[in-house]
Image 1 (cartoon, rainbow, N blue to C red):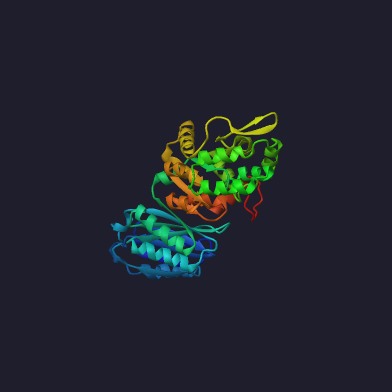
Image 2 (cartoon, one colour):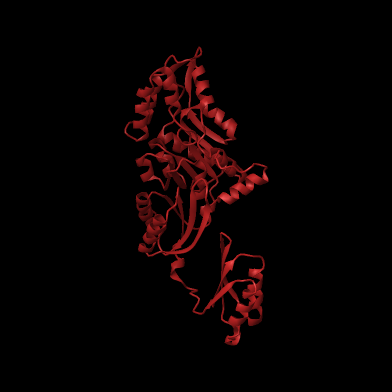
Length: 398
């Protein structure tokens, strides 16, 4: 028997419902409750009353009516062996804004896969609207492939993850730096100071799209910086702007005892300051050769390229004592592809098309803290933790 209570939320409703059920000898099978804008929906599935006592309905109506609540009682078999419970997935939908047609399209796609939406909850209203759906009845891989196409057409982002303990077991996050953790590309900022900005920017764009070999492209671009005063590197470092939400992202993960790493095709002369400023646990990047206060146009040591980023992720996981399956990688360019493929969850962040197509999920909004929602962390939890630490809530992601 399913008892559904609706009305304006107030203290004592849940207590009154269960107290009214006590005399009838029922057993609680399932409970769901949600409050939306002060409106309560409470559903309790119970076994049928002993001896089929028909006075239960009137007792419930009287007990809840005193609190201004509406009650509906429906009787059936309870669906204990509902086959849709097999093949469970968590689907996170992010929109800015999130429109009804997007939800309608995604819900229709889920139904076309033969799956059922068991539960929906909003996990964020800022900086994007994010809702999480619990879905059963279809393999996660099928849902991901179908929903990714649908989401792109609808202008929203969607992430599909198989339900289970492993979803909440992620413990290491590895971030690309340029155009991910920070805005812009460091080498292009240096090139502007060296007078070769347009030439370097064109090669960078081709490398990020995967059209040219990254290592060769990096050496060619660095060669154009020969003779640049090393003070220019310091200037670029001071001008760097973190991605919106970056501080919130790192701060929240640190509270949860995550390890955080950065891997960059850029330069240690810049990433070392990010490590110190944000409390990053591990880092890997290339190093510019500087002699007599000027750039030589060469790098020190081997190039950290696409394969090198994946190797760094593997190394950091070993150092942290974390299985690779419990890692998250976030990046935007083609040189991040191996890293994204290796990680337990690969996130394409404002990425090039080749990266969006290959990653487990893609975010098209410029807010780095939106990645937290893919890990099941809600905006309310983030802001509550900030308040407990004495940080005033703001509406500008930092």
